[in-house]
Image 1 (tube, chains in turn blue, brown):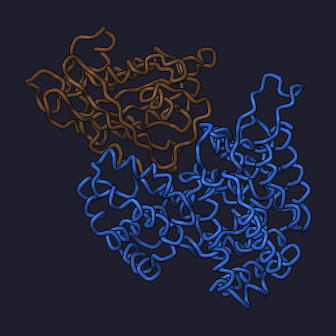
Image 2 (cartoon, each protein chain N blue to C red):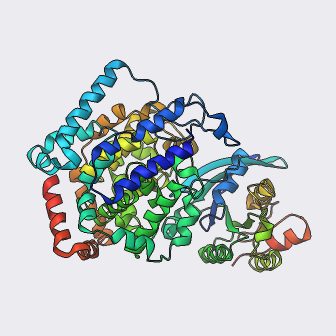
Image 3 (cartoon, rainbow over the protein chains, first blue to last red):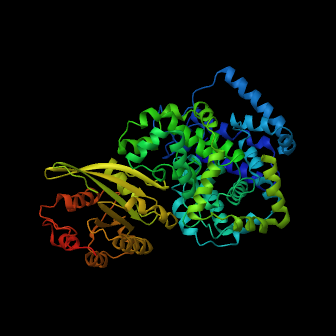
Length: 410
Length: 202
């Protein structure tokens, strides 16, 4: 089987799902299809002139034969058994196609939180992401909207999007093929969003977010998840990251700068001396929620938590990365420091090491204080207009969803 | 800014220009000698360094490669402020990217730092059949604005090392003293290049 073909298979699977209710069984094979490619022998007939790339279990082309990605090592029988148990628990929690989810969430939010922090099983990830982000509800409440946006509307950002399509996850098999299914769905999602919210339009960085989602769900589902995030279906709206002037990026960087000084004073002082500010290394963390900067297996684990717990996890992981490398970083001069802040060591990329460190860092209260402080200096990153837009979606329904979503998660 | 030292100097250099013009590709070619057809879009900014030897001086460029999309404009001043050199990149097959380049030139000129060496790079020069921005008119524009101008191709490596070398030569630190402040003096190069760079920015 050629990789191209398996991409098509994935896409067909996705297309089939996109209009109907999701049944989680359909999700199960996705990552494993990718895994299988590694072992498949090239069929001489089909190989032709195309050299088959070696990919990791997520479908990224490997740079070197022995590049470790933290997850390619074969699993022991014990680990396999443990993973199976975990999946069974998750299935019970979700119910068929997510039918039991809301009930479970209301009854045992702490169990959900704990399990999400341990990582959502890869085969259920796409479905669970849609449940916890509130995007399933948006999808169900707005039938036909996505199709309308994709087919009938034109966007001022079309050329900008096209220019970036082949530059988004260029090392992933799904997005590599010129005008292939991956690039087409990425284009559709981004174009639909740029029409849906013409004020945001298309901003570089959104492609990595949409691309990550598209590896786990259909394009219509990915679109609504993007809407849920940017318009704030459950958490604070993210669209300020992409509006003119990048107001939310500026606020987050201000907050992060202070948090570094609070939590890691020695490093904070070193940054000041070397004239390093967070914009130089952390803006992409926020703009793409780590989907651009970190290895995919780690980015996924962060996304699990991000969708459930909000942007706080980005601050926590950022601080954990600095903390993990603290003793090295404080010794480095400017240039090496900048390099180190863009290339964290392999052992820091292990989610089971880094994430517990991140969870242990408390930021909520201080983030609120710093937000107030920032707003005093720079004015509010207004969200009234955002709420208005969400309401236009489905008037009372959307507003209800938003408050309900907030209650659920609080 | 360029820091002092007889044989080794450090210079901050920033790349500006429209998205997809080839800023990252130019840097990658210059720093690593590589070219990637589908270079990942730059989000935020990226940092690189590379050294160039000019006579008996080694210039180490500390290079900030910025995101090109207009929406990222608000992050740019941090990178061009205090830069010893700025390379403004456009795509010779894209007229709009040239207009964006002119905007960058205006913005930098408005900063009033006449010591910054400004270079204009018309990239993708290998795509000669798709050319939209004529070379001669750009040369005139560059002369009028005191820019050093070259057409480059990150893909074929044409003029890439040359571009950075010529910038290094024009750094005020490398100019023979006395060098009145606010003036950028140049040594004798080919007449067209000298004309392009021998001026005092306003």
